[in-house]
Image (cartoon, one colour):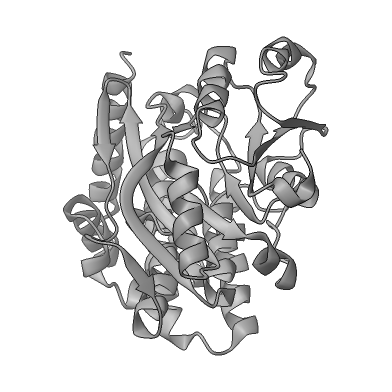
Length: 346
C-alpha cells in the first residue's frame, strides 16, 4: 500500500499472547470498514511462533512485521510509531479487538473537526460479562476549560481518559511534539504519554460510542507477584511530576496528580504490600507498608485527599490511610484478593 493511501497505522504490540486471541484481534482489524488501514505487528519477543498466524492474513490485511528483543510495551509501541506511515496512529493491544466502524468513525470525526486526538470508549470484557465505560454522555469538541478538565482527567485512571487505546492520534502532532513513550517506564506508561499528548494537542474530540473491547484477565493479579511492583509505579508517578514541572503552566493539574498518586498507592497496597506472595505476613506487612507510605511522594498526596475522585471502597481505604488504620487497609486488600481468586475460579 502506498504511503499516500494509508489513513491509519494501527500499532499492535505482541508479547506472550495466545494465538486465538491474536487471531481475534487481527480479524477485527481486517473487518474495518475504513479503507487505507495498515497494521504494524511489533513482536516484543521472537516472532517465529506467531508467523503461521500472520501468514493467514497475507493478501487480506496490510501487515508490517517488526521484531525486537523483549524491551516492554513502551519500546514496542515506539518501534511501531517509528515505522508508521498513516495520517493517523492507533494503538490496539493484541488480546483486544475493535468494532468494524471504529476507525472510520474516528477518522471522520478527526478530519471534520481538525482534531489532534479523537477519543472513543471502551467495553470492559470480563469473560462473559461486558461493561461499557462512559466518560461523557454525548459527543464533544474539547477546548478551553473542557480541555483543561480533560488534561486533569487523564491523571485519574478511573475516568479512562489516560488509556492510549480507543483513541486516534494525528501523526503530524506526534512528530511535531516528538511524542514517544518513555521506555524506562513499565507501569502507568499510558497515563504519562497521554498527559503529554493531551497537553500538546490543539484540538481534542470525544465520541461516546464504546467500540474498543478491552479483554480483562481477572486471574492475573493472583497468578504472579512482582517484587518490583511498587518501584515501577513510583517511577511513573515521578515521571509525571517531572512533566508537570517542565511544563510550568499546568498548576491546575496538581490536585489531579495527587489523586493519581493515591490511586496507585492503593494498587500497591493490594498488589504488592499485602499480596499473599510477597514473603511477609501480618504485622510485618503492615510495618513495611507504613514505611513506604512515609515517602514524600505519598505523604504529600495524603495531606489533601480529594475524595470525590474515588469510588466508595477507595474512599474508605484512603480514610484508613489518613487515620493510620493500616489494619483496615490490610483487611480490604485481603478481601480484594479473595475476589480475585473467586473470579479466577481458584
